[in-house]
Length: 351
Image 1 (tube, rainbow, N blue to C red):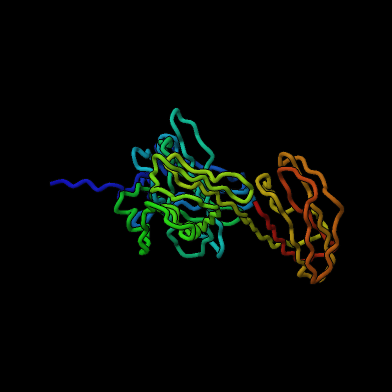
Image 2 (image 1 turned 30 degrees about the vertical axis):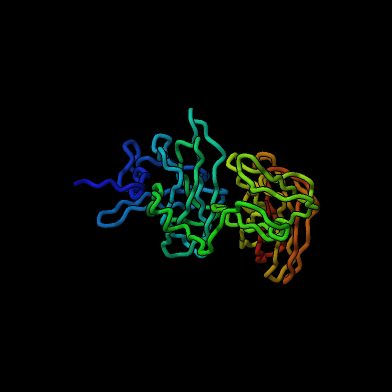
């Protein structure tokens, strides 16, 4: 008797890179290059008696990776919870890998991608990412690669839907029993913190102060309702089923590092796209024995550049912070010195 297993098989075509491209034998079937520049390279290794892999080397581009062909994107069908696994390895510690997932709705419209990044070491690692798609999403197109300079080896890409049994294993149930509120007997009972029903694992204390001059009858969901206001006198938003809608906000953090040697020739750092970053600063440490000079440059297209501010002197053994005052999409740092001296340059930003 045959038995159908739901959500346990890889839905990524050629996710193990065993098949060569039909038109390009030096690249795996169902995948395309994305990002990079003339200094980036993609090496497809398929030697006998070895597991195939794809190695990406990137020097100056913001990112370099691979993306599924449009016709190879996994179809969601009725499964909206998916698990994506990637087996990767960096060429040095703290190599930054990324995963980008493009939700595709009906008629082929592509929504804003979901972006994830992961630090890697020099040993192969398995990265796991659980994603939840909306009811209107029909396909998920996968892209993965490296952020910033370095090299990344990709061994396998796996994606499959999570069946209810898989969901039970990854969701830890609370041992505390939740009771339904059928009636309100006293005001003191209202002042107690009320635990919301799952799946929102939050405990929100709700304080209600009122003068009650009559008996309170039993409440029913159809006939009665309670409207709760926040501190700004705005009612709390709920879904159609009555669940509280919670918006969580915070700051993302971006960081990169370059070690360079300043000389009489004016040189520049890697070009960075800061269009999605609200704050961005350079920190430059002069670890050499000679005076160095640095200056910020801005560009609208990454080709035409202009200086921002005045050059800054950095004495040996000193750390200087440089923050661009004006904004354009691309930025970089130029540096020079009368004789050779070593500089360490950090870029740190928030979004």
